[in-house]
Length: 283
Image (cartoon, rainbow, N blue to C red; front, side, top):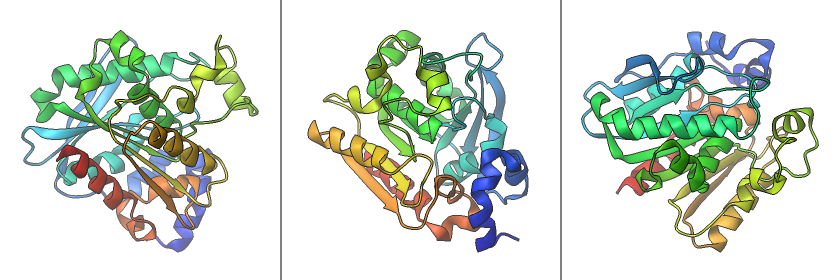
């Protein structure tokens, strides 16, 4: 049974004391959703695989490509079926890609993978009940960074053969968007070899003419501080990009992700707010 104690213990679960896969295995998933494809190759490398979830009666449905977090050094798509099922049960086709991780790669290789997966979705998702002209990018933590960067910097989708015009909105949960100077082992390892550190920061690649953004964080996030969300939202508004900004009281870094699960949705309306955003941008 999931209780408030479970929710408060979630940071340890997600951080690695207990694999997220174990949590995912016991969390009840939403009905009305089904996995329609498993480990479909979107590229030529071992980490270039994706799973697809769809509503039971999918037909030309809008699409969410969801990138998981894990400090760009851990994670696997199978552990996030609870998120995909939540979106699919609400009428969206949801795609969960794997992507290459540190230490095998550093910036920007994982962004190139995420863009390649998104380009594959644009070309192929119609076969799985999705509308290739209505794609949303979303993610949590490092995955939010990935989603936001692919949505901001057109070089990634252009390089992958995709089109930014197909992206109708971007949603980031607890993402790092403004983290210079590099002051943790993770960020130094992953980004330290970039020839121009400033272009690794989402706040520095904001431009006009972007799709709407949904940026959310927990007020109690002490891993990726809320100032990241606040700073990016301010930059986007400064160039007239529509932004929905949410800061959830009493919610931690992992708590904002776990609020997508069935037992913990009462803790914060993360799923409802994301769905409102997607539906509004899709109108």
